Length: 227
Image 1 (cartoon, rainbow, N blue to C red):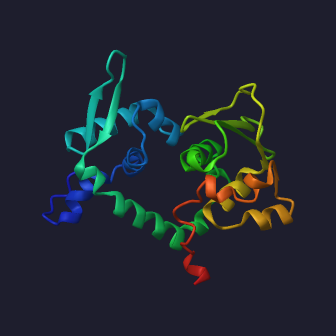
Image 2 (cartoon, rainbow, N blue to C red; image 1 turned 120 degrees about the horizontal axis):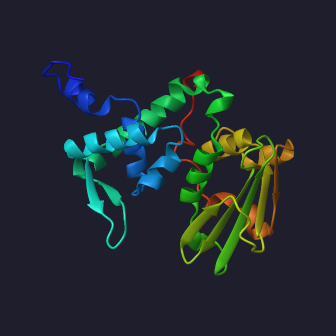
């Protein structure tokens, strides 16, 4: 959309104001590179819209599209202009915590997005041994209630099928509880005490979850109503 104004805000909105565009930028800045990776973080976006938005960002110079060597498909890389949006995206998220958290509904608690974020939050070097297997069981959903993370060689694989490995840490909870704990709206201790979360595993791991699975970067941001 062309607003016909010289104002730099209007020119920026012409590029970034379409539905899904800022969320695509979010995924690119969080490390999403392949089309399938971007789709995982944007589960409700249609393939047509995602392709159109990526093409638009490429035309405006925010995304560099490169053929994957010796494979089909492309990878998408944020350019300097895209990377400079990071503090803006972070500030927008902080504003969302302060002023839009009250708009959250049950349908917003997306297990796929949660697990993608938790996968990105793992710090492999803070785990013990060559391999760690983490299992999540969500008691409030019927579709894909079971998830596994396999951490090996500084790589974190996420799957919904049992990898057939010995599990080191078990999380049993609801999607909402896990989101609230990870976002800093609840704590592991309170959730366990209130029987909202069951955490089983070696004490060295379950007593220090946040040292190997980082909390959200917004944990210190408080809703405006609580200030």
